Structures are given as C-alpha cells and as structure tokens.
Amino acid sequence: MREKWYYGLLGIILGGIARLPFRVLYAISDLIFIILYYIVHYRRRVAYENIRASFPEKSDKECHDICRRFFRNFADYFVETIKLAHVSDEQIKSRFEIVGIEHVDRLFTEGRSIAMYFGHCGNWEWGTSITLWSRFKPSDKIVYAQVYRPLTNEWFNHYFLMLRSRFGSVSYEKKLVFRDLLMLRRAGCQAIVGFMSDQKPSAGDVTHVVKFLNHPTAMITGTETIVRRLDMAALYWDVEKPSRGHYRMTVRSLTENVSELPEFALTDMYARMLEQTILRTPDIWLWTHKRWKYAVDYPEGFIDTLHSQSLES
Image (tube, rainbow, N blue to C red; front, side, top):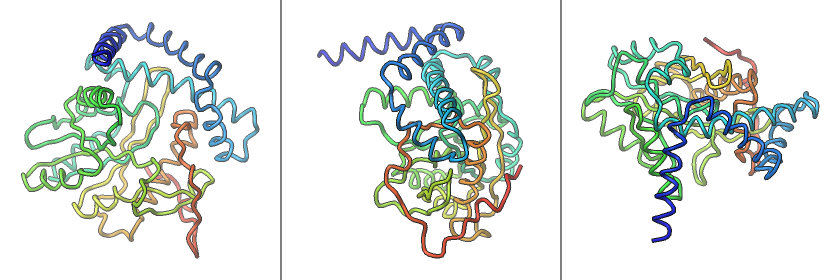
C-alpha cells in the first residue's frame, strides 16, 4: 500500500513538472546539474575516466571541461524527457529539427522497412517525434518503433514506455524484436525501427571488436543480423545540439543493400559515424555508461579500417 501511494505521488509530481514552461524546466536543470556534479558526484569519476581515456591528446583541463558540459546536458536530458508528457507538436518540432527525412519517405514509397541506428547522443527520447516530420504517419501498415531493454522497476518501465509512445510509436523488447518485425512483414506492414546500438553487448551476444574512441570495443551485432535477415535499409541518426534545448538530427544513409556488404561491415559503418558524431561534440554522448567495464582484445590480425575512411553524407 505504501509503495502504491509513493508511485501515485511521484506520478503527480512528474506530471506537474511536465506542465512547466521550458524556462522553468531549465532552471530546475541547473539545480540538478549542481547536485549531480558538485554535491553527490554522480558517476563523475566514471565519466571523467572514460573521457580521459578516449581523448589522450587532450589536457586534463579540456577533459574536465567536457565532463562538466556533459553533466549540464545530462541534467537537461532529465527535464526534457519529463516534458515529453505535455509538450505540443509545435513545440517539439521547433526544438528537434530533422534534416534528410526525404530518405525515410523515399524508402517507404519503395516499400522498404528501415533500421535507424542511433546512440546515446543529445536527447534520444525526443527522436520519437520523427512521426511529425515524415509524410507517412503511423497506421495499420506503417509502424514507427524503437527497441528497448525493460527496466527492473515496473513503474518506471511503464512511465518510459508511455513517454516513448507520445507521438505514435511503439516499443519492442530487445529479445523479441526479430519476432515482432517478422510478424509485421508477414502482415504486409512497413516499419522504421530505432536501434540504440552503442551499449555494452549482453553476455552471450555475438560481438565484433573495433577501435572506437581509442578503445578496443565490442560492438552489438544483433542489429546488423536483423537488417540482413529482413533485408532492411539502414540509416544513421546524426545528432547535433546547436543551442540549449534545441537539437538537429540529420538522417544519413548507411546502406540500402546490406547483402552486398561483407559480414560486420554495417556495424563498422555505424561505429565510424557514431564516433564522428562524438568527436564533433564530445559532451553530448552518455559518458556515465560503463562502456568499457570489461576489457576486450583486438582479434588476431586486426586491421583498423574504421579510421581509414571519412564520414559520408
């Protein structure tokens, strides 16, 4: 009973915060930043050590500056995500611009389904507003979706699923996503599905090691496997943060014919593009994630092909 009252009160508080204007939300964000960074030191050491190891050419001061800016952005992410519950379509479109939506519209016109690779950059939760930009709206035959790992807390899991459905998209659990997408295809539906593939792979997953941000890094390969098995087109979501509370997401093509690529080439392309996004603006990536908690080694005969190519438009 006590837990029920607790979450009921929490829901009321979050709902009240979501109704506040942005200028007030960012004042709250400033306070959250001070608490996280200067008082409780929430994963500050983890973030700094990740940054320090990723940018050996930078000075300690530069790395601390990146770390501090990251925590400011992280605090913004909290209040912006809560705001999703009560933000208008006009407000979100004025703050989250999508460039290159014609790639999505053309692929839908051609009858294709799409895998949208992205990472923990900027405010990834706002990306569900893509439905407001495309000519193809969610319907019985057009599905917008994102893959998620269920949270251990049932109340927060439900809360985030609610926020992510705000603009008409659905969420597919990671372990069931292939089955769900196969069912959509058999039903004659097209889908665009967001895959956040920069996380640490789960135990037992098939991985592919690349040099990423100066680390030997095991990359998730399940996304590429799904793209190959369902013959999906693959796009990349390149995020910028021009100013506080404003994001620009540019849709970039990875491949429309994955069968023509060697194994893991698509994963390499994603890692390269994500790294370019992070190098351009390091403070917008989620540095508190323990991405390199477990060390991996480069495979025998490893050749660093990622850094012999440039970012494609």
